Image (cartoon, rainbow, N blue to C red; front, side, top):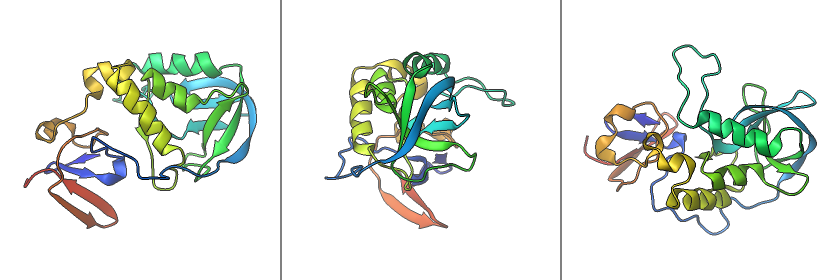
Length: 205
C-alpha cells in the first residue's frame, strides 16, 4: 500500500526489485484440504466449489472485478483473468492444499489448488501473466516458486505486465498511487516500525 510522504507499507507485499529469495524461502509441506469440483469462477483468484466452499487462491492478486461494489471499476484484464481460471478449473475436480492460515475473515478457504492431472492453478495464472504474487506473513508457502513464475511472465511482458496499469513504479511517481497495491523499484533510505506496520522510505520526503 502506497502511503503519504512516499512511504510504502510492507504489509501490502511490496517488492523491491531485483529480488532473490533466501535459501529455503517458501518451502515446506502443504496440508491436504480435501477436494471437490469447481462450480463457478468468481474472478481471477476466487472460485466456488460444488460443495459450496468459496476458495481464495492464496498468494495471488488477480485483476479485480467490481462485483457490484459501489464506485469500483473493473481493473484492466479482469475479465480475461476470470476467463482463464474458468477455462482451467470450471467443471474440473481440484484438491485444496494449505500452507498457512486456512480461512480468511470472509469465510473463504485459503488454499493452493491442484487439478487431478497435477496442474497448479496459481502457477499457471502467474505463467500467463494474469495475476501477481500477493503474500502475507501467515501464508507464504510456495512464495519462492510464485515469485520466480511472476518474474518470468514480467520479463516476457505477458498479460498484465504489458499494461501500464500494472507497471513497476519508480518512487518519484507514487503520489497518484497512494492507498493502492504497487510494485516499486528503488533504494530504501530509511525504515521504521510504527504501530505494528513497517514503513520503507525511498526518499527524505
